[in-house]
Amino acid sequence: MDKGKQTGVQEKVSVEFESYSHNEQFARVVTAVFMARLNPTMEELEDVKTAVSEAVTNCVIHGYEDRIGTIRMELTCDQGQLTVEITDWGTGIGNIVQAREPLYTSKPSRERSGMGFTFMETFMDSMEVRSAVGEGTTVTMKKKIGNKILEKKVV
Amino acid sequence: MQNQRDAYCISESLVIPMPRELDHHSSTKIRDNLDLMLAGRGIRRVVLDFTDTEFMDSAGIGMVLAKYRRVKAFGGQVAVSGANDRILRIMKMSGIGQIISFYTTTHQAVSAKQ
Image 1 (cartoon, rainbow over the protein chains, first blue to last red):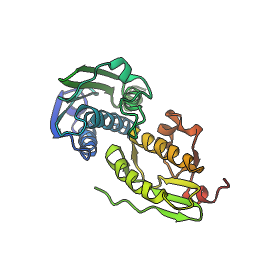
Image 2: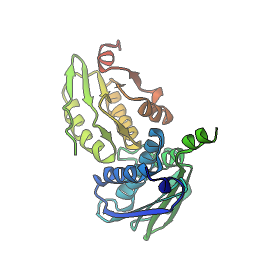
Image 3: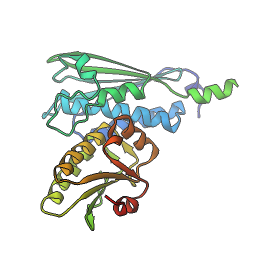
Image 4: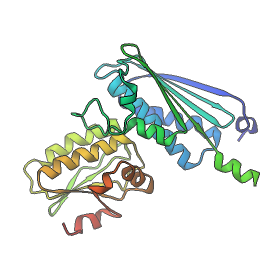
């Protein structure tokens, strides 16, 4: 792999796609391809894919409910720091604190576990939610990639 | 996207093969099939077969919980078989390990005593 890519040139990719549920997989695949340049471990790759899947699913189910709208995913890597920002221009979240509570779901009649935000928090280093009712929601998640490899090199 | 194997019956168990990637999209496909299969058959146990599953997010947890509620209403049990380490970790994180039995293979799940 090109050394420059590993040691710190900031790179950014952004994609927009429609909120069809099959695009949950598309978002995971794009993320995995982008992450390859950071030499992630399998665990890091799976952690980020899970978090991305949760965020995009929220856009599909909650942001746009039964209509089709645009989801934007922006991936940035900067010195091994991966940032994933996922935006929809849908319903928005009235009470973010409540939405983030484990097991809370606004759609109990559907087969939802209420673990989406919990998984994003668990599998990423940080997660931030910005939302306005009627305007949409942006979730920003960060994770340091390649920690284990770097630690080995220092030793 | 991916070919889902059909559910099949072994004695009183219904084995439902899970898709390679279990997310909100693919879980909605499974739900429709299971409801048809449960109606009218003497099923006592539903085995969710994760042998081929490489990815699962919280939609998988929602799906398992929904199956559990439905099968319990019939007086039956739900078991998970063949799940890899990561999927097991995700399931245990969500607490469903307390209500569902885990088996290494589908054969073990089907032949376990109720």
